[in-house]
Length: 249
Image (cartoon, rainbow, N blue to C red; front, side, top):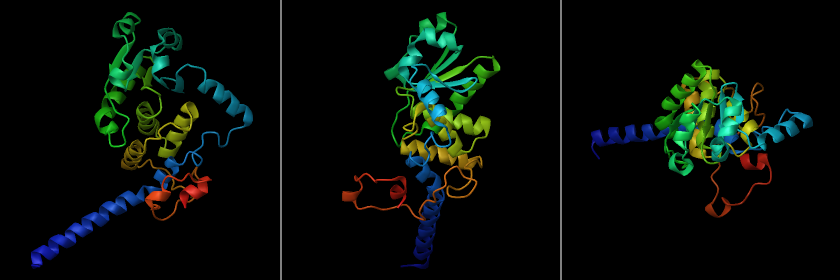
């Protein structure tokens, strides 16, 4: 092997190590997002508050995240009467044709509509493709004194990552706080797409809004993640851990 080949090989290995370290840096937050028991929206709420929240979650109406921002699945978004009663002036359909809305009905009710075909796949670049247009549309609604509803099919992943990103960027919530707020309104299955979780964490990291490391005293997550990502044999990977702590080990 020539000296040049040795140098190139060393650079290659160094690059791989740097990529691995960068991914590892996000692991404590990724671990918290992957385990709903750790980031359970019910934590810190009284029984009365939990029951009141469950009633809102199951009301069939879009969930209000902020005064100008709502989230739902496709069904509530098709109910024009509900949208008008809530003062919704702008609607984002993140599921495209599978949740297509009647644009003429929306025009008649003076509701502006933004639709795009996003995919609920781990490797789909949701934020690269749609965050900029989404934030611009939300800003238009807010500046006009209106309200914006973001929906997909179930109101969990595609709309969920867009709402959580808005909470991080416009309201300076850290990543875990934003997802907990989302799950408080949509349940613990919200943002369960692991690829979307990583996209959100990278966005938060870029804007220095990851928040305290899980396990630290000032974090909303009190359990410390393991130093390295667990590597289970394939035949064990389908076993369901019994507790949140088991899932971390």
